Length: 80
Image: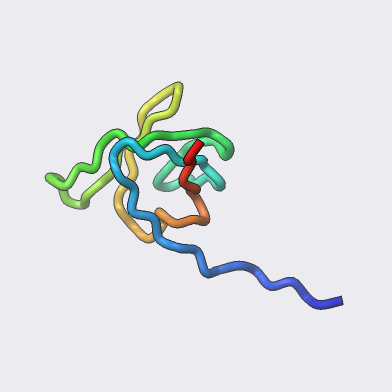
């Protein structure tokens, strides 16, 4: 039986205001949202350094610094 390899070629995501994403994995440092939740990008704040995004779900709004952690490992575009 062939040995399975860990997938590490995650694609960076550049969210746009109004897009919805399904949380695939919790990132405890930047985006503390439960996997399976759908979140919506509310704001792309380019006025502050470091730049950050504001995401909202049905319970609260969370902020996330722009960084390499915004990848398909953590978020998946929800087109439903």
